[in-house]
Length: 484
Image 1: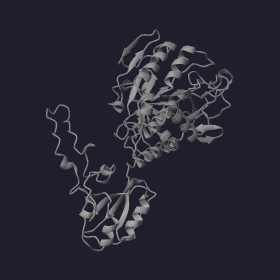
Image 2: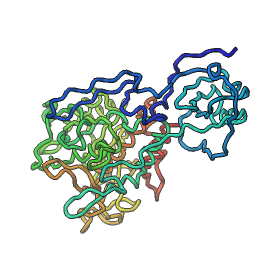
Image 3: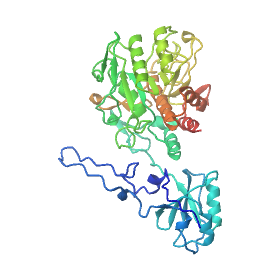
Image 4: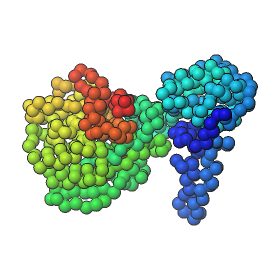
């Protein structure tokens, strides 16, 4: 007599396998209450009984509960066990009855009936899915992988291939996402069953526009640190008319975490990730005091990635800030823009050894004319990695003061802007390259939370493409390195 096994086994694939049956279901099998549109005056729809979120006849059992004899044969349809599929699971077509040989092959195997004549079987421990499927096929059962499916493309207008976002009299798309392999990185996360939301990422900048539709629900309550040591929790971004408040922080936040696949605006690297805006830049820039306050605050809030699109040129000694950087780097990966002048070396804090220094690529995989690069002013410090930063200038022989180097053009990055300034803009600089790196780092850590900050950094840099002595950001390779 076969052993009855009626324990419910937690199968991660349930929501993917029966997507239509489970639409709107939470992780516990219940449906989330629905909130009526604003102004309707209606009440929230009560959650239905848990049974409404279960496939018909969804019962876990072993072969003892199958019984019967009959004929099923593999129809020869091609299956691909190398394609993305849920590991540890095999779909089995049973028909109305099973032969004794098939019943024997399923003996002791935990299964779930997910449709008429269709079982989801748990692969026995120590056996490969394809091997297990082959054994079942040998017993006369048709099998296939429990394939993983993902969205064909983000629905945001700015995502490459979509209609684009209008800035001025032209329409643009986020071509930089294609260049860094963002979609391939997301697909790798989908295939591994990991979230595309990353980890808590802090943006030390001018603040972020909480009213921007592409940042709705993405921002935690931030904090402002001024140059005299004062602070204010939840202070908004400075006026759009001020020299430091023209959407710089909103741009950085959007590149990392603009809500993706919501049919609006742009696609951030983190689909629905959480951002911590920390305002350290004011009318007169930032200071040692404001940066220390921002770093300490971000670390205390549990940020695992800290983006700093700011800096000062020259080989700088700032012992007080060094101490804060070293302390924050014990738990977080720190990323900073290398600077926007080509003859002043790598700016500080990017030049600090515990910070990832990010240079900018122009239209091609060469340093943009404005991008900071190694030089006497910053000692032997090299760029750690480079990412698209906008602007067509690519010649390493010209300086940032060369005519046309910093002229805005169609090769600049499409980013968020404050709502007062039309919501979207084109920007160029290492300030735009750094958030792309921060977003990928956040995806990596979300893919494998067990990694240390040092391990995430090492895997990021080791995964970069080598192009003429530069380490070029490769989101797909970075995520896959984190998953290993």
